[in-house]
Image 1 (spheres, rainbow, N blue to C red):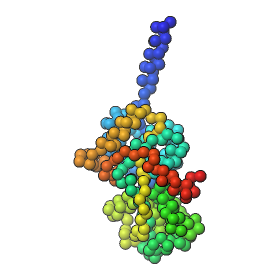
Image 2 (image 1 turned 90 degrees about the horizontal axis):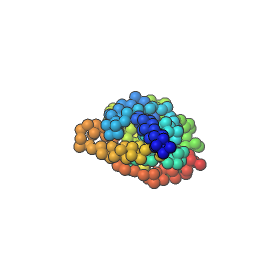
Image 3 (image 1 turned 60 degrees about the horizontal axis):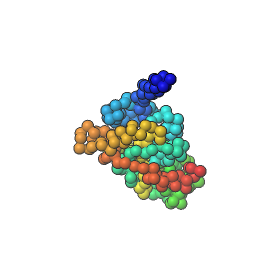
Length: 281
C-alpha cells in the first residue's frame, strides 16, 4: 500500500515537471506603432531567452486595458507598463510585481506641443483650442498631463474646444504637426526620438511646456509567476551592461542608459494623481 502511494506521488511530480512552463508570454502597452514595438523588443527577447532558457513569445495588443487583463488572467507573464497601467494592474490583480525600470523612469516628463501656426505659446493659450492626449490609460500621454493641467487651473473637459485621444505618442506628434489638432501632449522620450530621427518637423510643431518629473514605465510580472523565474528575469534586466556592445544595442532600443530595481511604492504618487484627476474612483 505504501509503495503504491509512493509510485502515485512520483507520478504526480513527474507529470507536474513535464507540464512545467516552457514559454514566457510577454507584451507591452501599445504606446507606439505595433511595428516599432516589435522592432524594439526583438533583441531583448533573444537576450531573455538566453537568460531564462525559455522560449519568448511577444503578444501584441490593441489597447492598454488588454495588457492589464492579460496579467490578471495569467495569459501574460511579463509586461512593459506605464506607471498608471501598473497601478491599474496592481489594483486589478492585487499582486502584480514591478521588477525593473529604466534609470530614466525615476524622473520622467511629458512635453506639451503645439502647431506653430496655432499661435499657442504657453499653457494658458490652450484654452479654446483642439487638443489631443495619447491613450486614456497612458501615464505620460494623459494621466500626468491632465493632473498638471488641473494644477495650473486648466480643466481639459471645460476649457478646451475639443478633446481627442490619438492612441499613441507618435500619433499625437503627427496630428499636431499636420494641424489636425492645435496641440497635444506626449512623453519626452518619444518626442526626443522623433526629433533625433527627423520624423517630426520642428518648424511646424514646437514644445510649449514640460511637466515636472514623475515615476513612469517598468517591467512587471504577474504575481503568481514562479519566484525562481522572477529572479532570473530581474537579474537579466539588471545585468544589461552598456559597456557590452550587444547589450548596449538592446538598451538603446529601450531608450535606457541602464535598468535598475523598482518597487510598487514608487508608484503611489501616480495612484494619488489618478485619484485626484478622477481616473480612479
